[in-house]
Image (cartoon, rainbow, N blue to C red; front, top):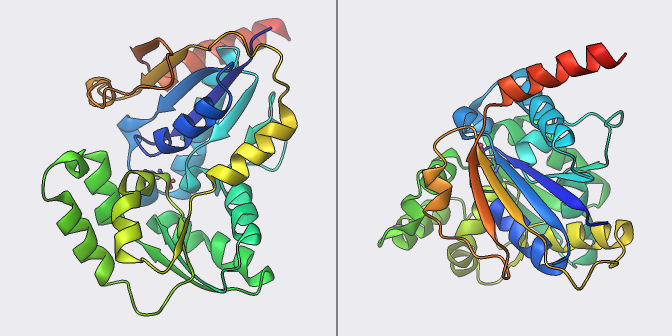
Length: 267
Ligand code: DGL
């Protein structure tokens, strides 16, 4: 039986995590939810992000996914420890895993405001005895979400913003917001001495332990959903292996309200 993996982000960021995952596991079907109606998550109250995350998880479970990747650091800070109907993996653990695999001693974490104020990376890295600076970069997140990163001149703007953060020589720069995956080349140029850590390798290691390649002969499908204007995602003209990609506008409200009604009837 083919398995389906769900991905959740506020917008375009999680796509940079989804693509390498689906390329590593071509036999998986994928469903991606971009909650663009509520982007950016990093500027919202934690309880709003938690509420949207719970709804998105419910919608994916209703659509029959077997596991979920919260491909958003900000939403990952709001994940419950347990109690979901399917395995739900956030980005914090994979990033920690990648950092532990590196030799880095002095780390810069680029994140959203909510991730930074949650203190999650500050305390996580304390245990690994690395020196850590966590910086919120909402302007760069907006730069990605508005698709300005696709315009000529984007690199100059991004490198200029990054230069202001460069107070030390860092061994590693952690993409503590998945939107920065789209700016990886510019980040690399701005910090040429640093390893760039996104958590993707750690995530693939975790998934490899969970999945068996039973259906390797068949390539999965991909459904891209947005709570906002789906044409933004469509215009990225994604290609993920040879997968057929479908696009859909969804409302988390309608689908999760329906599911609540369903659950009540069933019990
Ligand atoms: N991509 C998200 C993250 O990894 C959040 C961006 C936002 O919506 O603020 O944190």
